[in-house]
Length: 132
Image (cartoon, rainbow, N blue to C red):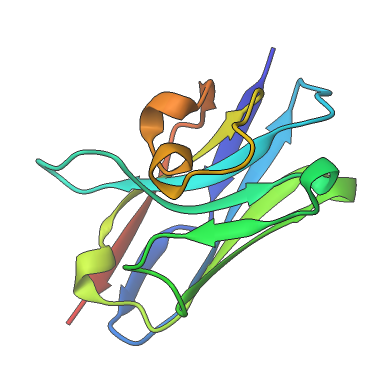
């Protein structure tokens, strides 16, 4: 059974940094992609960053709202996904979730791979709060 467990959330001031982690277990797919999503109160869950696994060369994609500030990466040896978040803004405040798509589209279409409907498994989330 696929399990995803996020950690690393917290409260920071604007301009600060956090690194989120997502420990994955229970799957051995050769081709997959993983993503970070966020959901603020009263808003839809939105994708912020995606990484394809090594089969696809580890390619990464970002929503424009976080490009240049967030970096997605993964450590295959540790089965862990990361999201380094720098220059945080109050509008980044949300619950952050990691997710995995075990049948990813190729070639990638940004709107599709950032869509929550594309993903099969989800973690429980970790809260990020950025104060001004």
